[in-house]
Length: 194
Image (cartoon, rainbow, N blue to C red; front, side, top):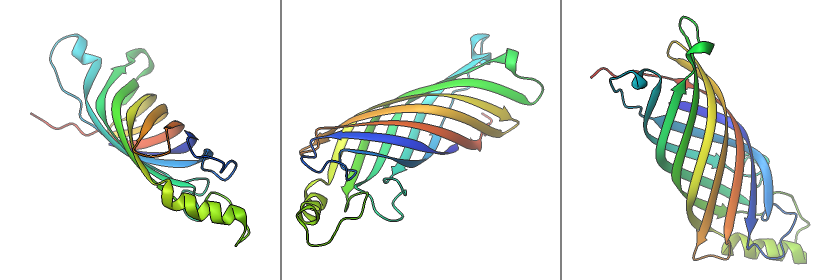
């Protein structure tokens, strides 16, 4: 299980004329919680390669992680399959180094807010933002993939990863979102005996 904190860049199509307010593009912090269940197999290859299901939830809400304002508050949930390959030449003693990756189906709920930046009240832009915050709430479905390099010190895990997520809006003006993220991951690797 790992917690991730990093930076994400989201690009959206189908938001109309609200350019530059965070509806079309936004960069900011992202937080993730990731649970992977690796199957313990027997055999020579199983010593270095493990695989199994992954479940992950993320939270991304503009440049302030939703503390002040956000054009969209995105909550993606990924369900997929992950694998990790131990690199024994880089490990020593209680330190193990892994190259990991996952491929998943992603579902997302995006709550449209009042934009990433403040605007003057009672202006044409303010009226458009109010309308957008009601009309651009959406759900989406798509895919996600990611790679990571993790170092384990006993049960403690520390790593870095890069993810790509693309989803398509369901019954909404928002046609597509593409989200890149880079993460620092911290967690624990718990072995459950059979």
